[in-house]
Image (cartoon, rainbow, N blue to C red):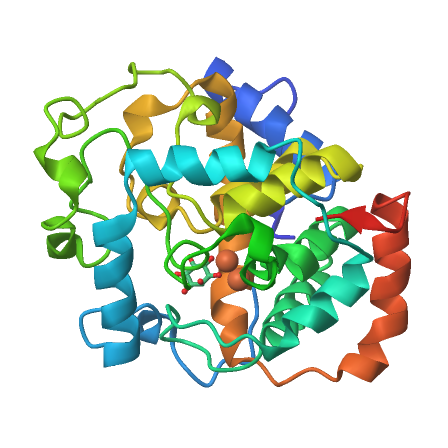
Length: 309
Ligand SMILES: O[C@H]1[C@H](O)[C@@H](O)[C@H](O)[C@@H](O)[C@H]1O
Ligand SMILES: [Fe+2]
Ligand SMILES: [Fe+2]
C-alpha cells in the first residue's frame, strides 16, 4: 500500500457522511459482501454486447411483443390466485432434481445464451464462487432461475413463456419508457385504463416494492417458494425476486416507489446482476464435476431437502 494511503487518526476532516460510509464498508468486509470489487469473466464478448434488444433475432422480439401486450393487472391477479390457491397440488422434489428438470428449457427471451438452464445456473454460481463471495450468494446464483420450472407444472396454467421468463416491470401503473422495447406496450389494454395508465396508478410514492405487483413470472414465483423453505438471507431473496427487474436495477426507473429497505436491496441486486448476465459467455461448466460441491451447499440452506414447488 502506498504511504499516502495510511489513514491518520483522528481524521483531519470531520465528514460524518464519509465516516458512516467507511463504517458501512468495513461491515460489508466483515460480512464478505464487498459489492464493488472487480469481477472477472473469461468473457469472449465485451459487456456492451449483451442485452442488445433492438438488434435481437425475431424469437426474442416476438417474445417481448407478446409479453408486453398480455401482462395486465387482471392477468397478474389471476396468476397469483392460482399460485396461492390452497387446493393447488404442490409438486415435490429436491433442489438438485429441480435443476435437472429445467435442463431441457431454452429461454426464448434471451438474446445472450442458447445454453440449457443448468449450464446458465452453474455459470452464475461458479462466477460468484470464483470471486470469493459468501456461500449464500453462490447458492442464490445456482437457484435464481429455478422459477422457470413453472412451465412444467400444469396447475399453474402458464400460457407459454411470456408469463415465465424475460425482464419484469410493475403492472397497475404506467409502463416506463426505460423498459426494453417500450413501444410494444401499445396493444396492452392497461395503457387505456384511466388509473393504470397514470404514473403512480394504484400505488403511492414510497410504498415499497413489496407492495408492487411485478409482472408475473419466474422471479416472483421462486421468491415465494424459497422464502418459506430456506434459511437464505433477505439479500438473497431480493436477488431472486428482482433479478429481472432491469428497468429498476439498471435503468433507474420506478425509484420513487421504493421504501427505505429497498435501497439496501437495490445494492444487493446490482451486486448480483453481473454474475447472472456476464457469466453467459464463460466456459460451459461440467455438471458432474461440480455436483458434489453444490449438493452440500443446497443442504446447508434448505434444511428439509424435499421442497414443495
Ligand atoms: O431473458 C432473460 C431471462 O429470461 C432471465 O432469466 C431473466 O432474469 C432476464 O431478466 C431476462 O431478460
Ligand atoms: Fe432469470
Ligand atoms: Fe439468470
